[in-house]
Length: 295
Image (cartoon, rainbow, N blue to C red):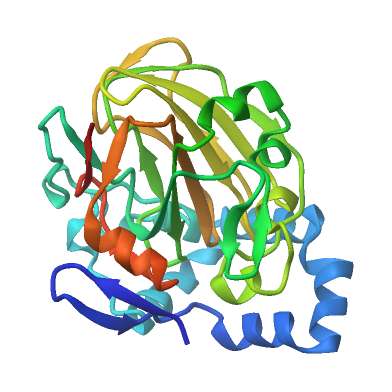
């Protein structure tokens, strides 16, 4: 059971997890863990499933998925019958009116829809994965020089579950550099998996880039793939200026995670998100929603 905080109702909700029984069995049973290491975490497994979800035959999965999770597709650009495959549905675009972007230049906005955790005054060698498990930013991006810029800064972790909108965006105007790819495994990023696999983010496939924002300094942007995520697709053009809210990229099928690292004394995260993070609880946010301020 995954509990998260709903900012609108100020109440806790229980997340509906796609494939919950299978995830729980895989990451908690001896047989499941052996299967995980031998097959599930491998690129071949995720690539094959991703190939299937790009095919027209996979459209038959859309209706059951939408009905099971009571998804609102009225905010999507395409109608249900217009999706060419399950992946086409999965990384669907939203209507411009679907999300309201806070335009104040001092407002820090969410880069996408999902569950967020926020950590301030971070120790680069002991970043929190879950209680009792940590990892190093140097290991995560394999660049000690870049990592050192974010000592005592702020880390945001946005987890996108399979039912979420799976495109991610720039939180400010500015210029983004080229993305660097790091090969890795395909573990789930579900909290159940994070409790079982040490340094999971450092094990999984990931990409990172530096976004030179106009109002929040140089932001380290990291996308982490997960089980059955066939691809991390970058849609921006490196070194070209972008506006606040412009699309950076999207994930194909699967739960995924985006991490943002800010330099020291650049931002202040909203108190409710920090409070819930200290309790070990994620807060649900949507793209464009204010989640903090510039210092």
